[in-house]
Length: 204
Ligand code: MN3
View (tube, rainbow, N blue to C red):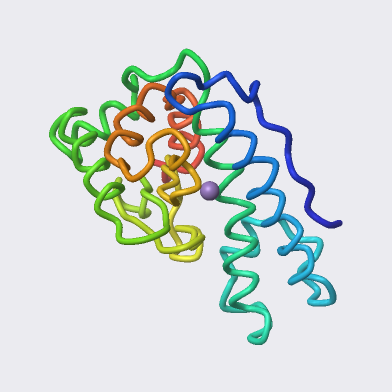
């Protein structure tokens, strides 16, 4: 079954003033849609057309070599954007609680240190890409990826993603990526991040 563009889980204006309505329209309706269309084109006839984006990204080394770059970019774009929309919501922000908060404290020392390090990784990422909080199988880790590369292709479990492509912020923030990342904390859905952490945490 070809991929379809999932609807935004909230209104286009719901993340105002931190992420503006026009950016959300373009980002979701144009950019995400294009990744869906190009992913479907790349997957056609490969035998992977019935797999989920996550299954494909986890097994990138097994997809046909002549389609691998297109699949990496466009299936990555499909999965990463869905993940990004679901990482945010109106009236969110604040701090995580429970096991996730404990793990962040244990790994980074404090939530404030974590925030600073995540922002540094995202702001300082050169060119287009993503800032990530992942679970690497042993512990939490921060990383950035280029283009639409997914931590799933590195065998890691993504927990939180910040899109640092210019299309994610340029209309409102122009070249000020640090201002976008600073505002983005106000829409992070820590409940969703905690859900992913609980689902992916290694069994005791
Ligand atoms: Mn994007």
